Length: 73
Image (cartoon, rainbow, N blue to C red; front, side, top):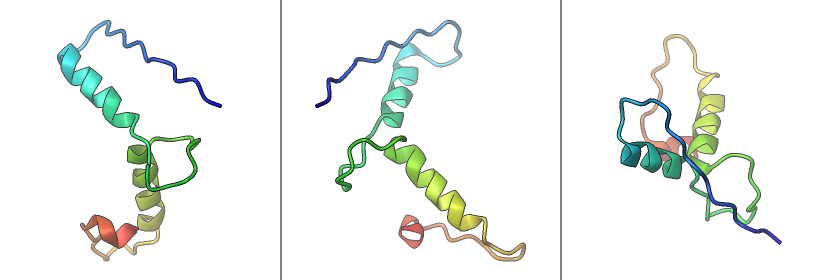
């Protein structure tokens, strides 16, 4: 059903090391293994951040956002 394709990372100019950049790219490719839908558009790191943002847009100006991850899930 799905043939994995390797990522090619080309760094033209960076203040970070190649290893650091590759770790960050790998971190953005994480799948959500707690979900049965394996064809999500975004990796779990970006998907969760967007969901938290969707909740936080309803906070009032004087409300303090919660810091715990569990509050948003």
